[in-house]
Length: 339
Image (cartoon, rainbow, N blue to C red; front, side, top):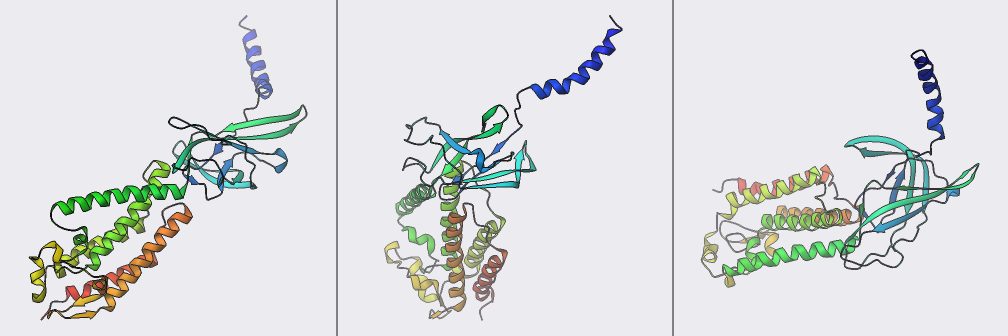
């Protein structure tokens, strides 16, 4: 019996590959679908397999319904708009980024049935295709490794605006209970609109709305670009320096406003581009106008690009430098000691 063991081992080594080849081919095919995609953008699906148009790939999306009912047509099979073969994609597997070769498929989900009150819907993507084999047509199916969120940017933005508006209303209520209006947050100690404080408020609201919207889409905190952190930090630094060097030095003609009731403070939008000298005289300030221009332009571009691109816009460093120079020009008169 012991003499037969080497023969058995050799036969097992020789026949093992054949037995594996006769087993049903699982294919080792993986389906990668990025989370937090938008309905307004082409829906991207990457498959580690070569797919041709003759295979007739179809995508079906299965939604979970914990507190809602199924919508008509939500499980209908969707044909791809584009089938791109031999594509290279970097995917995350076991917390490691790996480059893979496969097929990229794009689908149109603009008309996918999502309830009008939902900013996103949780889905399980399933891809099916048909392959020709000697035994006949073979239908194959692969399911994504995890559920994904499909977002409706319009509804998500409306919810983000509503949530931010609710917090602003709460802050306004708390300010009113102290006998002040919410506009006081934007004013200096002389009762005039403060450009630096207005800039901080604009960036806070803009970033809050966009981050809140994408947080609702992905149910997680989105990646915040470094340039955005730098811009917010510069705005806060400008506000702090402006307060220390400028807002505490109130002209004699405006000192009465510090002790006046809140109803007597009447800020004007022209305060954002006007400066007051030591004699209490107003004059137009090019540095203030420049800072207001770059702040408004960058905030608007940030909001539009973030919505259209589907991710938080990474503001170019050139624009960050322009913002820094405009803020330096704004702060320079405050840093120069007055005679």
